[in-house]
Image (cartoon, rainbow, N blue to C red; front, side, top):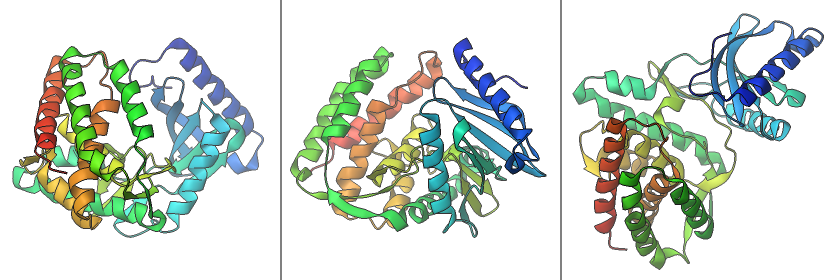
Length: 322
């Protein structure tokens, strides 16, 4: 079995191997698992989950074993896959097909989707074509969230607590210096709207371009299962900031630190009103900066790109008149 990507502390490898052995023992006697077999480790997230490739019969599959709160997390993911598969099983915008659920192992198995991660597709495209992928990405997210959208009162305390925890963990001085200024701007632009309302929906939870697989005109969302209702602007901010902090601006136009045409694509797909577009989406971009901690071993090049993103985001926030 191939080694997982990234650092894998020994206790986590032991936990994963224990899950693999338990799976193989169960597969030998459970008819539901006949023909299911594991192959390579794709990723091991310490203390969280192990993701492996394999087969279910003749069908390539992805096996996700949860380590933390294993049974509860697997049930949550399975329920969310069942829900979204009901309206995203065909056409241009899809999610993985759910195949197997083994609660006692904290395991969910999905079909392996065809396609190339969207970020790779954008990077490989001709300069004039890179921005063409922004509208489909926004439309995929809109299809995913539309059935669960609701209007609720704005609640910011939880977000400020998450920001506080994130800032306390920031390891890079070049990024830490901008964070207090970003937080001050978030509080400034949000203050007049704290008694208002915003839209929430069941979120993807980790909506970045590598979690969309492009196969021709079809986009398949992977790693879904967040299942919590969050402000709809959070997934948009995750997508746009993931590219921007890596120096990828598909259209070449920057606004509030991210791709300007990307902002427009989400605004159109979700029919954002003025407050959503000019306050809550920028607010969530700032949240992403302050809670998404860069790895300690990040290269100097990546740090410079992230710092440049912070600076242009801060300039954009300062221009907002709430």
